Structure formats: structure tokens, C-alpha cells
Image (cartoon, rainbow, N blue to C red; front, side):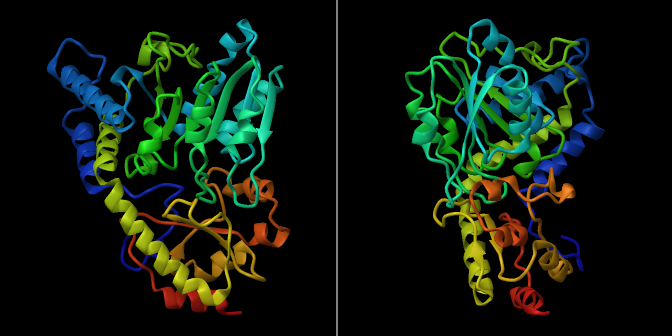
Length: 379
């Protein structure tokens, strides 16, 4: 954060870059700039080694194999590849039923809606007011024709952690593929994502203190059986034919290091985030906040809150010189549409209109909380 700038509290939209990651990225942009596909000289060979190392770092984080790591431009592309890439196989084998939830990011809901318009049957499960879906409600919708169950690990707006472990357990004897959008938890909540019943796992570099423009789709094999994905783009053999194009070596190398740092440092980071959360909640208590999302089931670095009699727009204007926050998903916030997540939770209209998302990380300094509260209290 630069001197004089507001404290950045929008880490669910994108995180700051770890200094070591930034140094590595610059190295591969400025010094080792070879194409990973060039096999006739050392520049290409060193680029290939950097990409392979990143595959290994990312695979280790989720207890996967390096060959199961498919690099993409980000979690949005990974989600699309996971969902739309299964459609061809699903039609061919009479598996045309999809289960997901109303909580999902638009990068999941819109590809699913595209398939629904193309003849797929879709069931979307709503959460309760806690913001958490009931795993049993998902599992009871399973059919012999179910192709895919897609469930985010934690919601980007509320931070509520979803029951992916219970769903994975319930899918133990069902053939449906299980996709987890882990954009908000990759490198943060480590152990649940190591579950081998998760067939497809999406993540982005810029959510874990790495660079924008790179992501991953983990495509786990079932024994010797590969998930039958078809590519969405054609024109080369990269990434096992699933994602052609020249690999962005600097971004991939940075993503790999960020994943490794998440694996070794997530517990210390979580302690720092929990401590920040306690100070934040204590500071805003006099404002009688309404917290959206069941405490104890929420990411330590996220609070979705509304204050009585105040719209989110009004609140953000009041504190914009002190802290940078948002009122929902960064991918859709420019449209100023009421949050589909909060609506699905059954919140009152004034709570939805007033909802602001505060999200931070281990690198976030404390703002002047007294000044923030005074600004919010002011008329």
C-alpha cells in the first residue's frame, strides 16, 4: 500500500503480490524469456523446467500429479473447461443432468445455463440464511444420469465455506464427476482440496498472492481413467490438448511459487487473518452490524456486513478515503445488480442493498478503525 492511499480491503477480488513472487516473475520476463515449446536451445529448455517445477509445486499443494495440472488464464476459464468440456461426452453417454447451487460464481452459473438451454437438465440448490448449502440436499438430487456436481469451496461474497468434504463422501459410489471452484480457498484451506474424490478443481493465481492472467484446472485421473474433457479451443497440443497456446512462463512460475508458499505458510497466514477479523468486528460493534454468513463457517479473512439504514453505495463513499472495499463480486460489481448470492440466502431487501464485503490478508495493515467507524456513523 502506498502512503496516502486507503487500506486495501478487497482481497477476495484480487490479492497483493508476494514480493518473492514478483521477483521471480520479473526474472522470467526480463532474463529467461524463452518459449517453453522451443526445444533447440537452452532458453526453451530452462523455460520448460520452470513450467514443470510449477506443475510440481501446484500438484503437491493438492496431493495431485503434475500431469493432472492444466494451466489456463484463470478460474473462469477453468470453470468453463470443466463444465462445457464434459458436455460432448455427457450427451454421448446419456449423462445430461447437472447439480449445482445458487451460490456459485457467474463463471459456473453461466456455463451451466448455456448447457440448460442446450437440453441439459439442471438442479440448483439454495442455501439457508447461514449462506451454507446442505450437502444432503445436493446428494438427494443424484440420478443415474447425473454428469456433474459443481460446488464452490467458499463463497466469494460472504466467505461461507461449503460442505465439499461431505459431498465428496456422498459421491463415493456414484459416477458423477465432482467439480470444485476453489478460487477463494486454494492455498488457504489446504487439506479439504486434497480429497481425491474431487475430479476437477479450479483456481486462479491472483487470489493467492500470485499474478493475474494464469490459473489452473486440476483434472484428477480415476485410476487409469481420465476425465473425458473436450477442449474449448483448438490450435496446438499444449496442456494435453486441452488448452492450446504458448504458455505464459513468467506467470506460471510465479503461480507455482505462490502455491508453494501457500502450502508452507497457510496456517501462519490464517492466524494473522483471524486476529485482524477480531479487531475489525470489535471496532464496528457500536454500529450494530448485521453479519451475513454463519460465524464459525466463514473464511477468516472475509466479512459481509450491512449497517442499519445505510446502503452499500453510501457506506463505501463515506469510507473510500480510508479503506477500499466492495459490495460484491468484482466480476459483476460494475453492473450494480443486487447480489444473487444474498438473494438466494433469503435476506431482506435493505440488508442486500446495504451489504459491503471487507476482505483482507496476512499482508494487510490495520486502518484507523476509529476513523472508519466515525465516518460510517456520520450523516
